[in-house]
Image (cartoon, rainbow, N blue to C red; front, side):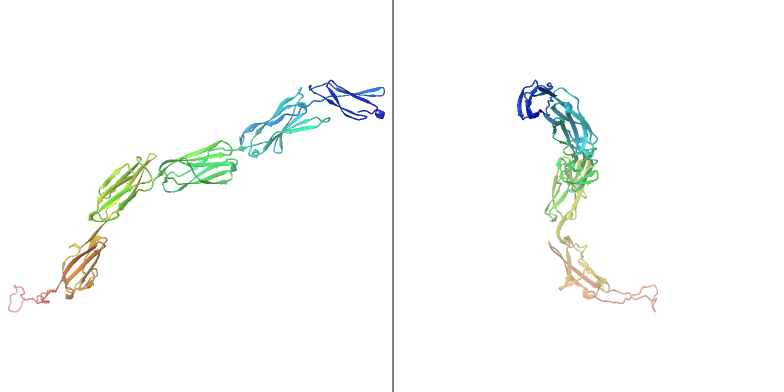
Length: 468
């Protein structure tokens, strides 16, 4: 630029760099420096002629290079309390002495770094040691690089792609509470509890029983997470329950395993048929559906004669012919299973019902009876049979009680018919009743006139002269 009066100045630029004219006016001229290939070119000198006068002005040439990249090193997931370097790289920038690099966590400045003069362009790295706390979780870390050419040039700024911190805590394995033993066909609950895990929303539980995944619900109370599941085992034996806790997306996991034996339901004892007519065949069947040999041992037992059949089987069968004497006979089925060095035994029993027609034994229903007139008697008659028979006695179409005693008169003498009836038939028996009168000896009052006192009385008074 020139202040020559009238604007008659001649302007030029003296520099070792190739120069091309740019835009200009009466008192000013611009120049392009071409093919800048030196980091520290010599000073450029601007000169002007105003008439016979020449004036010079010199200025330094500043060569700069914008950073190619600003990069933050990835930061893996951090455990609470763990320290890790946050490192930002600024690649190929010049002049380094004009560079400022700032590391921030959210809105908080962690470190600001500047650098000394370096000849030419260079790459720099800025590091800050971060000690992770719960408050750092999901915070963004950023790196800003500023190249300032002020006061003669602009301010250039570039930033790295932010990285998001992931902070977790998984201080201890979960605590698993499970039943010490569980019967097949029953249900129980198990709980898996984790204390001090962070963040609670990212904790994932996995519960498996014998390798099969279980459904569960999780409750949060402060820093304690509790998962509850229902156990319904379908197999018998020693089962393994496992609870695994993981903080997403951290691959680190803690797990706890509990082993407990599963019992089995009581065996099934079946009589086919359960009520059998005397002389027919009955199949006694003992079986367990929940376990398999060889761990299982079955016994078919008789209440009186002991073991009828046994062996390492899941089913035992015994055919027999039902006799009347077998009515009410009890059979037992015992299942034994070895689980975890312990033998678990379960028993079940049942009773056989043998059906037979009524029987009227002479001891229970005598066919001849003699009653004394004036006493009280019942025409008792008992019958055996299965189902229990009904006994009805009567004479001349009139039913009489076999239980309630009645006054004996001569009208009760005669023949009665008793019928014992159940679903298999009727058994009949005739009963003859005799009614006798009582004989009375006259009381002895002493010797009679003309008789010796040594002889017994020779006359008796007949009170009742006949029987019916």
